[in-house]
Image (cartoon, rainbow, N blue to C red; front, side):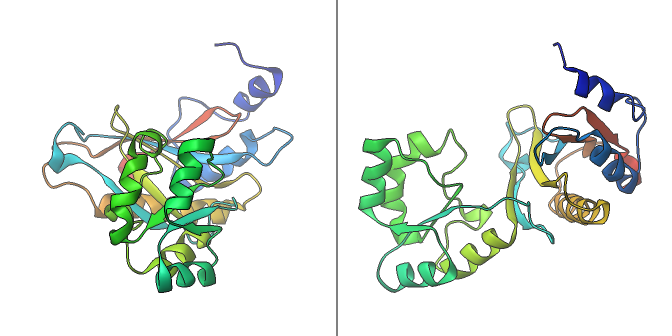
Length: 229
């Protein structure tokens, strides 16, 4: 894969083979973010889980203390009083079948997170084929299927992110922006990693967090030493 001049320059500011302490890695990844826009910093965590086994699935959500730096658009499926609560909490879109039809007929996806009350899941289930592949289907483990829609909306707006294993048993999540301070990136990433360690499946043998890499949108990966965590 061919990279541009800026990528080549970014690679020169650190040792690609070195395993950095988390705090140092946050400082290094900021230096590698040299694009003209405010790049997203992502954490890529390879686990020792085998996602084919139900008891080794890792999925949930955590509120990052400094948010993600992104304005998150929240869609809520709810009715009556719960719909009013969602609007008051700051949801961007609230509705029932009207929104289901808009997504189905207009291929409308002007939202980043979907929240639903349990009684609406029968309706939302019709969107499984389109929301599922995009990772947008509400899920109780992520706190997006709940009667407390106000709390869910507020937490998401404050910086709540969802984490889950992909097919390669790797977790990919945003932990901030290049414009964040080193301390903000460190605290966000540390919060995420502490949460992942907390939910480690008891059936996982050997090393749980096998590799951790921080990378800006257009930059190279910076390796974090997982043993020191």
